[in-house]
Amino acid sequence: MQEPTMRFLIMAAVAGALFAQSGAPAGNADNGKKIFAAYGCYQCHGREGQGGEGSGPRIAPRPIPFAAFEKYVRQPTGQMPPYTAKVVTAQELADIYAYLSSRPQPPAVKSLPQLNN
Image 1 (tube, rainbow, N blue to C red):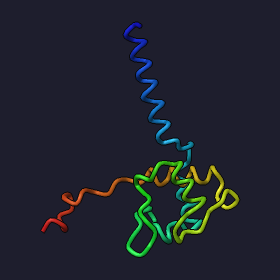
Image 2 (image 1 turned 60 degrees about the vertical axis):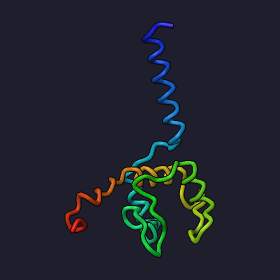
Image 3 (image 1 turned 90 degrees about the horizontal axis):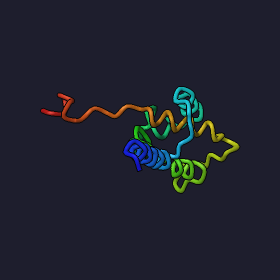
Image 4 (image 1 turned 30 degrees about the vertical axis):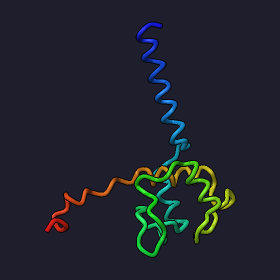
């Protein structure tokens, strides 16, 4: 096999593996932010999905893989109410996931002077 062909096959395999891992459908982060607020997700998970003590868990900036996220939203095991496809469409769920995925990482603790005294 020629070297350029082999490189292409390797790159295609890596790209396919990365897509399969995320498995997230295309979503609109701006719309997801609006839905996250409108459906009250922020009330337990915080405006940035950061979670907090006595509330819902942190779900951003690196949410769990989309398949697990979707399964939990549709059939939660904790206090969260189920959000069936009749309540949150597949596209809205993809948009919420895109919003959560778009949240920036918090700054490193060492970069905050107030916490380094």
